[in-house]
Image (cartoon, rainbow, N blue to C red; front, side, top):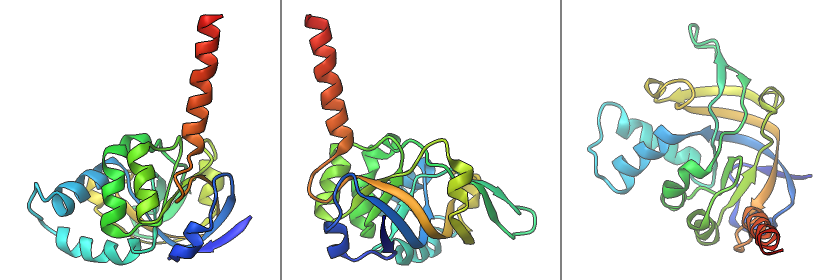
Length: 206
């Protein structure tokens, strides 16, 4: 298993190939639907004026995401009353919902890795080649196990989005993932889809 430390340099990203197992170490950010919509509307397409703490949060997350990793995760978190946060469950959520936004978000923030489950589409794959970046597949159904790799919760932004949709700043150690979309235009998800379509067509015409 290849060890990678966040922030990840471009040469290490380009060296990754689909199918490789990786252990991630360092600080990353979680973000799902509400976060992507907020990023796009407020700072990328600028169809919405910044409000409240938007600008302050933007400056803070820019530093974390530059060369960093964004995790599609809606965690279960304890310690909400005391502020002593701990991830109880930290499984990946389906990534395809973010496909309309992900490429633009990767380019804007210089994100090197996106973690989720189920893979993403052509727009994200193109951004992986350009930035460069990769898509890491995390194991679905192992939320409690993955949470053990989260060694510390450093803080949270946009908690008003709700606990699962907020941006949690987490420190991970030996966080297990598999590269399923690389910076060279390869996608295991696209391959599986093509083979499945081939088999289906064969069945329908037999």
